[in-house]
Amino acid sequence: MSKNSDWVLRRANALPRGIATAMPICVERASNAELWDVDGRRFIDFAAGIAVLNVGHQHPRVVEAVQAQMQRFAHTAFQVAAYDVYIELCERLNSLAPIAGKRKSILFSTGAEAVENAIKIARAATRRHAVIAFHGGFHGRSFMAMALTGKTAPYKRGFGPLSAGVFHAPFPCAHRGISVADSLQAIERIFMADVAAEDVAAIIVEPVQGEGGFNPAPDELLQGLRELADRHGILLVADEVQSGIARTGRLFGMEHSGVQPDLMIVAKSLAAGFPLSAVIGRAEVMDAVDPGGLGGTYAGSPTACAAALAVLDLVQEQGLAAHAEALGQQVRAFLQGLQGRPDLHPIGHIRGRGSMLAFDLLQSTGADAVAPEKTREVIRRAHELGLVVLGCGAYGESIRLLYPLTIDEQVLDEGLGLLEQALKNPG
Image (cartoon, rainbow, N blue to C red; front, side, top):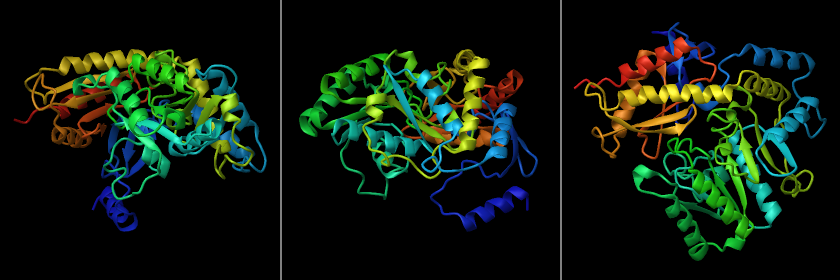
């Protein structure tokens, strides 16, 4: 029995079914955009820990920053005794966030935790209860975050009743025939039929949907949401958990539209694999909660804060946002070159921003009908070939590409070659 097989068996015996793992391997080590399993096999990583490793695995600057912090202290609980790296990181985030006026930030551990607290802050600031989210949106697996998520299986099934006061509108998608006007009109219908606008605390939206299929929010949608929110005294919340920290070609995905949210949620690539998230917002909104109403024992871990400061330095010094855009153009051109080839499974609906890209497997060339079963087949084949990729989308029809932004050019080319091999049509 291989070491992988042994670990897979031990995993099945020790862990519940509810935690899924995409690949039947156990990782031994990783570096930048490559990882090796316990059997010594090498993989090219186009998943980056689900968009967590924008600066790659084990970046020396991040490792150095964390080691230096560990020599000082690992934990105090910020509610007990404050520390410099927490405050410095909040200052940095405040200076970078595309939010009008004076800004303040608070740190947490996970994206879902930050989502939950953003809603708490919005409710406290507006004295309202309801929240509007979107079909296909993903905001986490905790209870309020799960209610906000716009996909039933596997995230909501069997867990009801869910948190009350959440209403969903369709998200624009051209190949599904949903326009920006459709989405905005649906929100007006929610106001008419389900909850009064004056009872809505927040509208939460991803600048580029993550699990929903890497669908970019059209600028017109974000502009329309900003106008609607201003008209009704609603707070606009941008969930940048997956789209933030240079992934889309800007530091934050909202910057493409020029629309400024009232609150912003960041996580994933903020700390290069260390559990850290943040809510950034207008100071008067952030200050609405009484002392003690926000926080968490591990929230804003010193080691994670040190890692995040190193990440932000790397993003700025290496111009990773612009590099993400350049890499994205290269990969998009590669994918477009695969379309229509008779030796490959049909692909289409290539979309995304910067290096947050996805495409669908189609029933036939040029069709809009998707083929989730083909997507699963291609992902399985990619894993066999040594390429780590993940699916997404409402039906699991999409393949998303999340290579580290620090990936070496030859490794990127090798990974794209493996993807092309995985798309080969055996028939």
